[in-house]
Image (cartoon, rainbow over all chains, first blue to last red; front, side):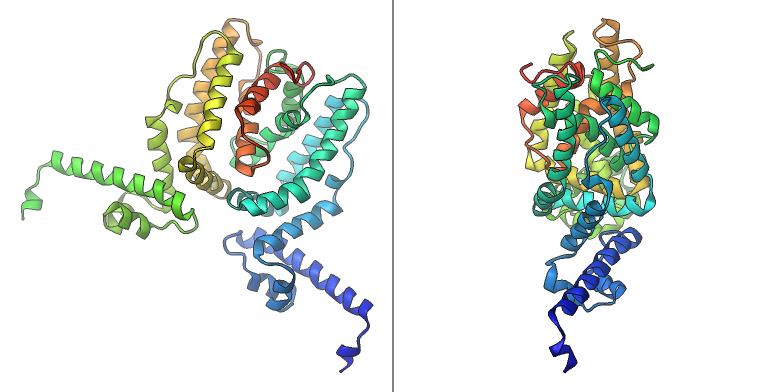
Length: 205
Length: 205
């Protein structure tokens, strides 16, 4: 009886606590068992909630996992502006070195791989990802490049989407396919070569 | 009894026919049902062979699929030299436009996605892929870049691995994550921007 008379704010708090527990459980579990073996049942058991609580809020395990990443991104520096010291090459190198470090952390590696490959096979999830996670992050990157355009570091008519793909694409690709070592030096070389171009790049730069 | 007396050349021919049927079945099936639902049983049924025939040659469905791609690559232009007209930008644009077209073909899209994401989750397969497929193709790309170094189109001390990642990485990435339209124009912009660099690029080029 007391449950039914419980106040709305209490219910909201409890819902929020359950939601957080579910997202954290999904994130941790996918790192432990992989995406294929991730299940709503497993997430519910780990979070200490009933399966129905999860199904009330999310249609699939992919949707839960996606929201877990979104919560993570919202709580991290990814959602804030890129550094802007006035030196584009130095700032991009800082950002890419941080990404290299993140990719090297096993706590993030497996969940990120799971989301990444799930997106590759699920166009609906890819669209959700593009809209809610990739587009806002891309906008922050564009802001930094626009600032460099204003100061004359970059040409005014540069295609910013192509520019972002050139700087960040190779790093993501090497990480996902383990096609080479992910080192701070690689991050530096990538930024220098992208900014100067293959024609003007120099390995000693 | 006749089976036991069959000549060795006949057996070799039959083995080769079975091997081809199995590889083709794996390639077609993964496109139809996806990697998760691909099974040795399914491949055997489609190829018209017994399961044991497959297990005699391959330890897993991933290994079968990998060999199917290898057979495809060996039979395609990917295994031959890149065009060399003396104009690096034109030649790379030709190659990347062809890749864009290949990525757009549903017959290749699903199997390539399956292999790509399987590699992301399986370090042993990633190593096999790197050694048997990526490294030889990368060597062909390096040959074309070395030729441009000899003619002075590219600096002698350019890091060729970084250069290859810059030209090909963004394309693969956009394809896998469907993060933007894969068009001939994108291929052109990518090559131009990679060669000239963000600092020297011009959208109108």
